[in-house]
Image 1 (cartoon, helix red, strand yellow):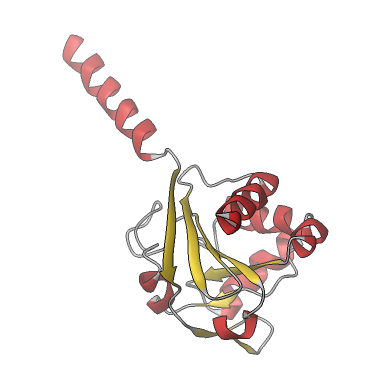
Image 2 (cartoon, one colour):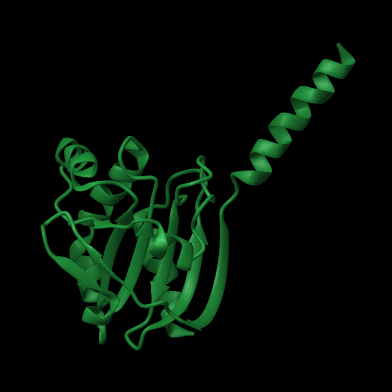
Length: 173
């Protein structure tokens, strides 16, 4: 029994340590990209020069927490707009895969469809539950295209008010 208890305690401790959020302040040029979106257009990071951007990388289709996260961010759209912040959700799914989940969760913001190139450039691959997918990651990019903050949330949730507070803090420094 003692060995079993030690093994279980080790597994629980590892789980707790690996599911803790991590945050990094940065000041690197944000990798440029152009991606198709679920609305049928294309979006480039360069389109948002002059605006602060939060890239929201998630596991996408099949991840209920990921879609609820975006739905809750949308509820705070006025506050984000007032702070000159736009949220761009990025997934590694097809349009058909993610739009069904978007509709089921009432999400209107178009998702950007990544083949893995952008998720890799922003170092989000393998940070979640699946080695080949992004985790639950946020990247703050200032109006000049400089990456200011990276946050990884393996617990699959960040309060939208806290996200905006993190973004404002990173953009002010």
